[in-house]
Image (cartoon, rainbow, N blue to C red; front, side):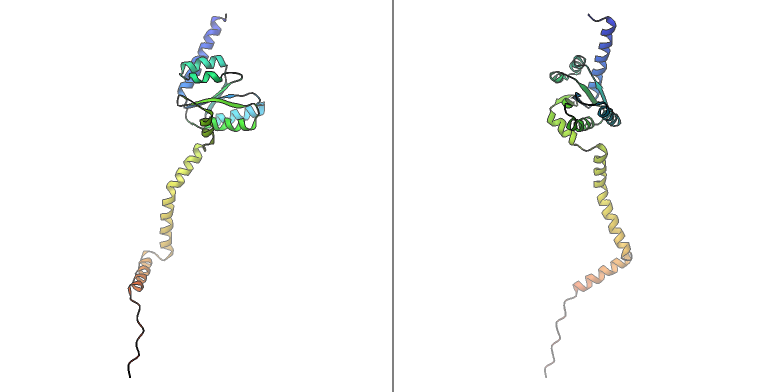
Length: 192
């Protein structure tokens, strides 16, 4: 039987994991078997830069933490090696980064995941992985907002290039007058 000190340490780990599961918007479990040290280091750096917390966890401790966090559907995947990646803000970062490594490393695979406290299937995780980064999405939105403004600016510049508002109005009035004038019929020759 484990000592009281060991039990307290394990309870603290379970409590911390449970809080982490409850407070994160998304989480992904992976089987990290097959990843080498260089790839693991690069992956952890990429996850850290994206605000994703990644840790290797014991299956029994994660099982208890998942139960406390009402994520009981995760227990069925807790076999073999397990690492947990959670994000408190970005829904897609963990899935995107881990899916990239799962594609290139044999044995490294995504086991399960959750989104806003609900267990999701691997198809949903795959869809999350395909979402562009937050920066790209923001750039697309800003581009959509800028398009009408840019068109307006080009129109104003065209007016300036044509000599200003007065010149454009005079040109428009001339076009309108020529369109309104009926076409003159050819003059008939006088009868002799």
